[in-house]
Length: 212
Image 1 (cartoon, rainbow, N blue to C red):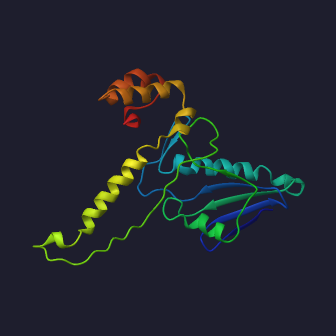
Image 2: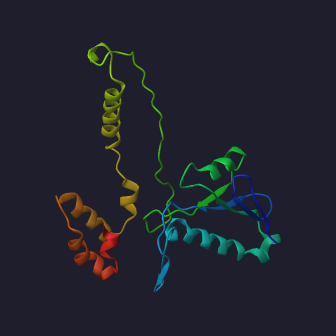
C-alpha cells in the first residue's frame, strides 16, 4: 500500500520505498481564482488549472502509482508532495521546508513555456518599505518631505534597475518560430493579433484569443 498523509497545512504526502536517495515529485493543488468552463477539444483539455498545474499533478500521480508493485525493491525513496496555496502565500511548501523537508532530488510540476526540462525558473521578491517623515502643515509642504513623493522616486529607481533584467533562459529554450515572433514584436511599433494569427497561429492551430 501507499504510506500517505495530509499535514496541518493541507499538503498531501505519499511515499514509496525507504532510505536515500530521496526523489520527490512536487506540484500544487490550488489554482488562481476564476472559472473557465471545462471542455475537451481533440487531445486538449481546457479549464482553470489545466496547465497550472493539474496536468503535471496528474502525470506525477500516475508515475507514482505505476511503481506500487516495486515498493519494496526501490533503491531509495520516492515521495509525492502536493502542496497548498502555491498561488498565494506558498503556505504548503513553506510548511514543509520549515519542518526539515530536503530531498536529494526534486522535480517540480510547473509550466515554463519552454519545450524542455528547465533547471531554474523565475520567481519574485516581495519587499515592504516604510517611509517616515515629520508632520507639516499643508500650506507649508517644503518644511517636510512628502513620503508619497519619496515612494514614487524609489519606485522609479527600482523599475529602472530591474528593466535591465532579460529572460535569457526562456529565449534560449523557445523554438526558432517562436523566436521569430518575439523579434517581430520587438522591432515593430505595432503588430496586430490578426497578423500573428495569419502568419503563425493558423498553421499551428493557435487561436487568435491565445495570441492576445
